[in-house]
Length: 163
Ligand SMILES: CC(C)(COP(=O)(O)OP(=O)(O)OC[C@H]1O[C@@H](n2cnc3c(N)ncnc32)[C@H](O)[C@@H]1OP(=O)(O)O)[C@@H](O)C(=O)NCCC(=O)NCCS
Image (cartoon, rainbow, N blue to C red; front, top):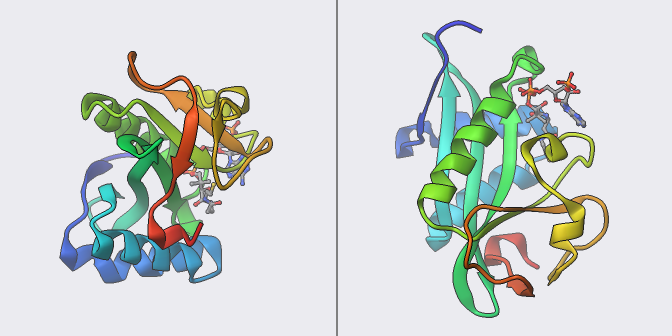
């Protein structure tokens, strides 16, 4: 895809991000999580991918506490507009966002997602299983971003997840 940029979302993008998530997921829950994370101060990064004309993708990163310490992050939701899925937009947002979180010193990134998609970015269900939290199983995956972080512990998610 030509001329695709990734940048932090602004308040002016909020309505379009909601529309995009509603269209990609077919339910309003993901967009509500994005809005709530921002309201609660639990968002670490909200990024959009756009071309010359419109926003085509969005990714959300948020705080995760490990044994009470605000050291890790979570990824999700991530979406590409249904018209342009399968063209690398989701992958670009994921790789760019993970680099940002690594640079911000976050120890790990956790997510709940498709088990055939996220391992290509290095995510592993085995690593996530070392941590206790609201989710478990093959769809719950983790990626180590920095050394010297915790190797186990109990995860606390932001209130937006109701977990
Ligand atoms: C999942 C999503 C963000 C991926 O973004 P994208 O720009 O379409 O994907 P990319 O072009 O970067 O990557 C394409 C790859 O993703 C895979 N993929 C896309 N959706 C997938 C899914 N639901 N399960 C498994 N793999 C999936 C494709 O099979 C393709 O694999 P290939 O490279 O081996 O052919 C996007 O398809 C989307 O918005 N889907 C609906 C919302 C959603 O499910 N979000 C993720 C929640 S965990």
